[in-house]
Every structure is written in structure tokens, then in C-alpha cells.
Length: 381
Image 1: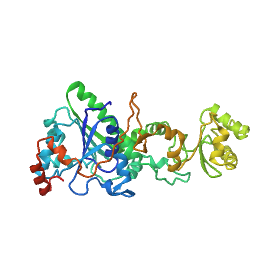
Image 2 (image 1 turned 30 degrees about the vertical axis):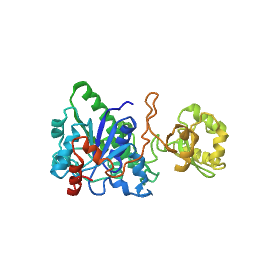
Image 3 (image 1 turned 45 degrees about the vertical axis):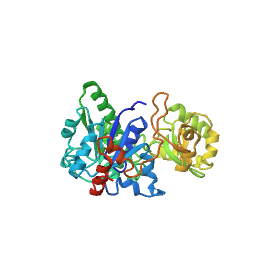
Image 4 (image 1 turned 120 degrees about the vertical axis):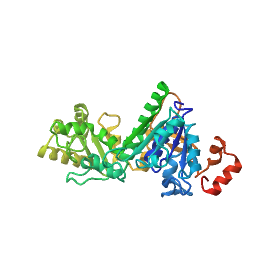
């Protein structure tokens, strides 16, 4: 697999870091979760539970190994440095400055392995006036302008159901940075530090909207091309739920109007003002007469860019999604990347807390007797 032979030490918790290392694991990397000697990753015990483990934790921590280690102890610190000498990547999501206080700065880590890639995921980045500010996904959406353009026409922001800042701004950006840094290390022998800010990531996603504002456009909820300003890009109610219309191109809009029996609206895709409202009302009246399934059957394979709004359960049962899923012992798993002919997705079990501590420390010379003593001292477990 593309990352076979790459070892990752993952110090992160919750969603952004573990999601990033899930992608790396799915591409073949060996991922070791380095967890504290308390409760470990907070997500382990967040409901809903499957048995005694969070279902969400299982989803993003498959095929990883778990090592419990107290980095604040001298021995724990030294053992981590010994492990760092065997690793290619270290990912952490502490607040800026924590790694330095632990004696694990990038400079110290590079003294152990020159080619090591160190990636730090944080809300606001490693520098700047707000670098130490606490936050979560919703806060980063607010600070980046994303929330201001995500909502209803009256301007009330709507909280997205998916953690866009955590996954898009943080995790996926971190994966890109790590892969680029690994390539550079392979070429030069020199490792680097990747400073991934979730705010930076979201602002980069806002680039088209920022450019539009710079050109004089107004960015507002339900007021732009792709968030509801025009009849051709809207969510409409149907008899049993909702259906999306994204017929931006004239050929798609014209064919949609023909199939809906409203050919008089063929020139109103980008209508504004009163004409836009009349167009939306006319389409709404027609689409409300049938269910999502009936419209799906009516449109068939026609190119009209209309899809039903599915519940999570319906989305998982959708034939296209089911076809693309990979099997994890009878349980479907969705993975965003397909590279070459090999299947990619972490399909194994998520590790119990500290499940691999003994084996991993044995790799760096800790025998059974010393391991038992370290457990008694609270250094590992």
C-alpha cells in the first residue's frame, strides 16, 4: 500500500487528529495512538456506546495500536523519544507550547530522528494573538465566515451537521501537509514541522467567496450563487421530505422544466427579485405533489441534477453508497480514497486502551519485569 512502512505516533484526541491518522492508516501506515494513563482519548467514552466503547471512536480508530504513556514523567518522556527514533511522523493537537513544555519540541524530536515529520493541528495556528484561545468546530466556522453564509434568508446561521472545520480544515489539511513533508524528507533527508490551523483551512475553503467579496459581491446566507440565491440551486419540499435542485447549466435547467411541465420557466434559472420568488413558488408547487421516490423514478437517468435529501440510514442503504463501501467483517466502511488497484480503508478493530503497550515498549528494549514496574509507577499501562 502507498504508506506501507511509515510509522505514525498519534498524540491527538477527539476528531481532527484521529480522522487524519485514520486516512494514513487506510493508506497503509502503522498508527500508534499514544494515550495518557488516565482515560485516554476522550472520544472513547462518548455516547452512543457499542459495548463499552464509543461507536464514534471505533469508526475513526480502526487498525491502530494503543500505547499508554505518561509523558510528564521522566521515564515516559524518555520512552517516547526512543519511540520517536523509530517513527516517520508525529501528529499532535495540543495547544501551542505544550510540546515544548513536555520537552518534546520539534528541535528535540529532530535530534532523535532528522527526517521526522512533526504535524501540529490547532484551532488558530502556532502563532498569532489567538494561538492559545480554546475552541471547537463551531467557533472556527464562525471566525472564518463560513457560518455567516450558511443559514436562512433572514440571516440566522445554521449549525452544519458535519464538523467541517475539524475534518476539512483540520484533518484533511493535515494529511496533505504530512504527505508533502514525507515526500520532502524522502528527497532531502530533512524532516519538517507542519503547522495546521483549522481556521486557516476554512479560510482557504472560503477563497472563492473572499474573491467575490473583493470584486464587490455581497456574501450572505441564501444570497449567493451556491447557497440559495437563485431558483436553479435550491432545496424544495416534496410530498415526503426534501429534494435538491442544482441545475446550474442551461441544458440541465431546461430539461428539468420540461420534465416538470413548466417550460415557461426555462429562462428563469437565475431570476432575481419578484421573478425569482414566482419561479421558486411554481417549482415548489409542482415538486410537492410527489414523493422523493416518485420523482426519482420520474426523472430516471435524465440529466437534471436533482437528488433526494436522504436520512443517514437512507444514505447508507443507497445502492451507490453500498456499492462503494468496503467490508469490515460484515460492517460497511466508507473511505474517501482509492489509490491503484488495492482497496483502502482501515478495516480492523479499534484498540482497547493500552492494548499494545507491552509489545510496543518491548520493541525499544523494555522487558517484562521493567514493564510491570513501569505500570506500578503509573508510567504506562
